[in-house]
Length: 135
Image (tube, rainbow, N blue to C red):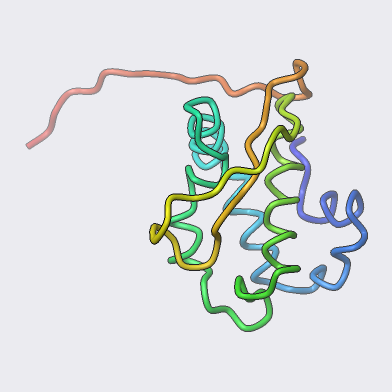
């Protein structure tokens, strides 16, 4: 089973104060959704930082929330650590900090890029299908 928000808190007890935050839990759920994992890995593998792949949606969905405010540096660090924890499951380890394009995003100005170091505990399996067009 893929690690849960509680597993994240157990692995990084310094974020214990967010354990009862529904927004923090929802942010983790958003980041650990298979589509968003794919988007983070794709962005990372294309020379961007992992957060770049989901940042527009992350900021528009969760920006300005009072109990998990992206203006707080500790909260931004927690989001970065969530990404680190999630991508580690796929064998990615942090590499270097990269700046975001200027003026592109509201709350985040830089984030980590990752490098594939080992097989990890999980892998993404992409499935394609062709379906009839219904008008």
